[in-house]
Amino acid sequence: MPIGTMRTFTFTVRDYTDLRIAVSNVQKLPFVASASELERSMIGTIVSELGSNIIKYATYGTIIASLYDEGGQQGVEIIAIDDGPGIKNIDLALRDSFSTGQTLGLGLPGVKRMADRFSIRSAPFSGTIVSAIKLLKSAGRSSTLIIDEPRIFDGSSQPFAQRCEIGSHFRPMVGQINSGDRVVIAESENQTLIVIIDVTGHGDRAHASAKLIQSIIETNSAQDPKALMALLHTKLQGTLGAAIGILKIDKHSNRFSYLAVGNTGASRVEGKKWRGISKDGVLGQRLPTLREQTELLEPGDVLFLWTDGLPETTTPQFLQRHIDEATQPLARRIVTEMGRDHDDAGCAILKWFA
Image (cartoon, rainbow, N blue to C red; front, side, top):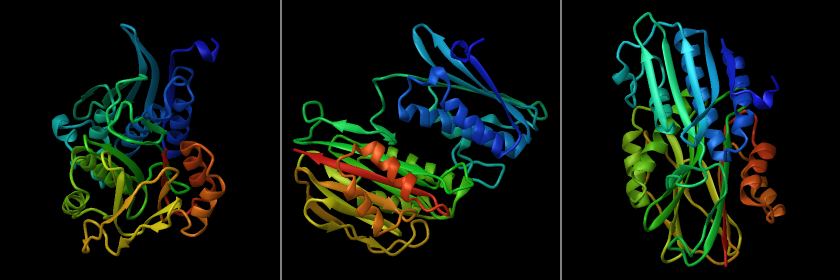
């Protein structure tokens, strides 16, 4: 049967090499082609999380990706099957911060949040079957998202006097599947937050901490950035810790404010010269006295946020040379071409239009 007409694909998972291949191939499947970049990213993350659980707890298993089509709704169903030791208490395993391994235990709860439909069957010594369905839809998205695609905010439909385009991208260091660097966009009635995150370390533990930070930001998107930073510091105690920069855009005044802790960077690469100040510290370990900078957004401004996986001096210059490109492909290009191989890397670009 030609690949384009197949509805089900099966991938064996024995190690992280198998898992990387599965994640890549699932995102390229014919029935995923219509998905947005964000949806493909979420589908890939679901495969990665479920496959990681197979490797950690069962050592061997199967990932099945199928076209989901019911009642006019299309999507992708990811099923993970293993014959491992099973789960003694499913309710407990679905709680944030629970783990039987050496991570923060956000894998299954994270998959459940990302999926539109989720089910799990497991019992001690009887293996585990997890089903996660992600519907593909062009409208009705949540207003709080991890951003890895451009978004246009238009004053005719949003309480902005101007409009802006935001693009972002993040990726793990070479040799890792999951990244501790992340960009989160969180919207509330009066403000939009662009948050750049760099968790200490790399790999699965850093990735789990980044997802915890994402969840806290999503739940508290209307908070003042200083209060949100203090909350993150409290919630991250006992974890790896993180460097975080928060850019707030006031939807009514068209002003932005910025405060940061640790080794993240921010600057205005087009428009009036401005550079973000990041106070020395690590959220979850040492919270410094916060300093919030406030500036007015002017037509034509371009703001750039980045983690230390990107060179501090040459990356903004690279962005300036390619300033006319759309934000999302440009963010991806910056991380791909400028990112250090030995570190996670991420960035966000905001273009403010007249």
